[in-house]
Image (cartoon, helix red, strand yellow):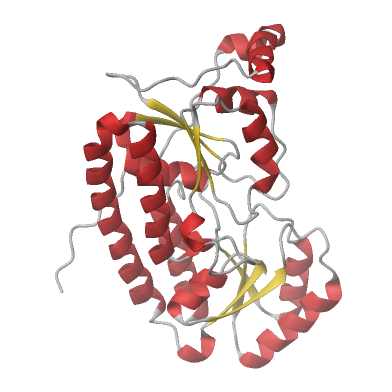
Length: 308
């Protein structure tokens, strides 16, 4: 099979707020009053002016950027590297939402805490879509569908349709960008499988701190165990030690955690058990893991390196 050359599109960039907002808080009163009164209007796309899009997470921002290209200007409410489970919105987020022509949430309860910000600030003319809408009936417990690249294609289908509806004049460009990015995601799926298939089947057990990788495990035929459901606020030593003892008995050499969580308890218990703690990501970051494709390839290589 001949594969197309692999290339990464440029990562999205979060626009900076103007100095007037940062230096003079009083200047924020006018747009905030407009938001409260429902009078703010989204910036309409026109020749040479990108469509303003707001997403709830940085990962969704990257997907939108790949489908929208230079025709969109994307702002993520939850910045790269932040924990979506504990994020607190700011007045600047309300302002960004009020100017958006398209708003993209994940759905499935992952970003529901931002619904009040979005519904209270968005213009009546703005379109609000849920990227996981096609998938929500398949698993009501785990909204991290993007961990399966096949599901990520469903995300960008919904995003493409939303962009076309919000900016119909550029539908052909959105379709072309979608087609190209879909090919990249298809290749990503192949690359992940090729990388992790080098791991012995007896070690294909993904033990993670955070319950976010079930769809990854389902796609590639792995077992998965998580220590906590969401933000680790209720983790206790007993279950951690019990799971690590089981892991050691199975001969699994490593467990995995995301850097944004406080994993001191896991680190200490793993050290006592002689098990390594590797790094894995559920969302994009600021630097080397700046895109969805970067993140998924990093995770696959991390698993292969520590579980072989």
